[in-house]
Length: 421
Image (tube, rainbow, N blue to C red; front, side, top):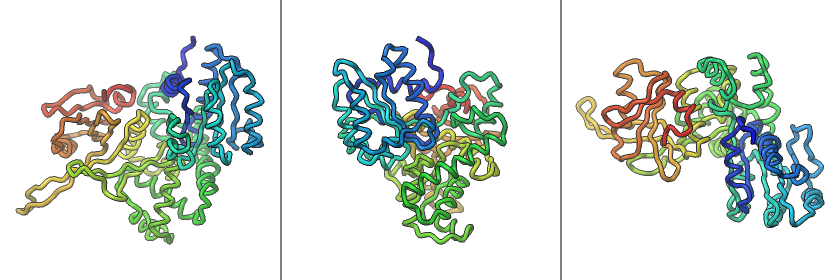
């Protein structure tokens, strides 16, 4: 059995879910590698495992795929096409439906296929509103979601011999979309990313949601890209669009457009959470781009602040590892200027998977003891027993200080999937 070096984490997930009687739903932004995962990596594995190629039936509805079969987007035609190929009840079949949200009424068809004992069903989709937000409803509790993302830094480095600092510079500039490996120069990489925004991502959001104010939507993408790692809400975004770009828009429309961008997996919001009060702040969140290269190209590579880029990449890494991620806030009563005041301190990330919880600070550099204490201030005020971690941009050896707080280097965190455990 050959070694599968490309997307091994996702291949392992598919193998764990294989033949489990559920629909396997692979979600994520367009061009993150969902189709390749099924049509090449998983299909190759199945064939090597002894599955006849004719028993693997794949239909693509991705209009950007030159081999798409969009003529089968009619549910009746698709059903006929599939059932003509599922002929022997004694044989095991695998059905792959790529960008299935393009088929009106696909839910009933997919559930029908999944009810057949000899059919294992896999679908991909690039719109959360159509798929992941309603998985339990659509598939009656019989759906397993696998969230596919652009390459993590560890995946990006796999099979490459350049020094890690050179790879890091390339990754934090252009990101981890798999197709970038085809391009060799900065100009061609940037052109590819720009084209994705104009011909695929924004067009898809506008068409799917019948967006009327396309100028405002585009301006919102730029505003979110510029403010990654900063707390915001629809009111702030509305005010920014009106004061800076002179675009009139109301808060309700801003909220809808934020939802569209999140549904397309282009941005993700981390809500602000009161650690002591154990409640969320309404409408306040930090937004991170699904891929740092896509964020950078929206700003023409102008705002290359290491701290914000590092924070976005850490957020994406935590999400890829299956953690739910919030922004933490802890309030402390302190004496300031002779008066007792409530002071708020921020924890960059609260990462939890239902069992484990981690409080994480992202520190681009710790040049002094003053900076070190600044990073620790919020963590020291948390009085529960969950692990507290500082991820430092410098390449440092992992150590635990006298307060039980773990310090680790950024590369150590990114290159070791189990380091938090």
